[in-house]
Image (cartoon, rainbow, N blue to C red; front, side, top):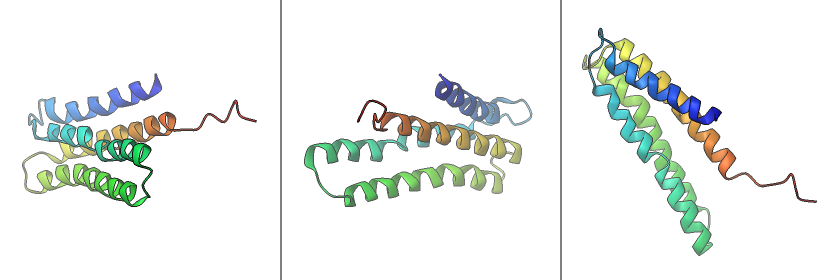
Length: 121
């Protein structure tokens, strides 16, 4: 419940960066593509490692690609604000939305892949 609320707060910040009358530019909404792409490499390598039993090199590559996507989602609004494609206020809203959404992703993956140690001896 709290992860869904946090995710909706993050998306609200990104939409506010686009829709406020003073800002009125939908360019910051491009970061939603990064939100969709960010968990894919890690999820694919988790599934691949479950079936093949291969080493950590594949997972390290997936984490590297994921971090590249995350850094790009933070860099894109800053670059757009520097070239005056968006306002700095929209950039700040987008960066705050990025922080909230990625913390939500981390919380989701921590709860999804945690061990059930409450019932073990």
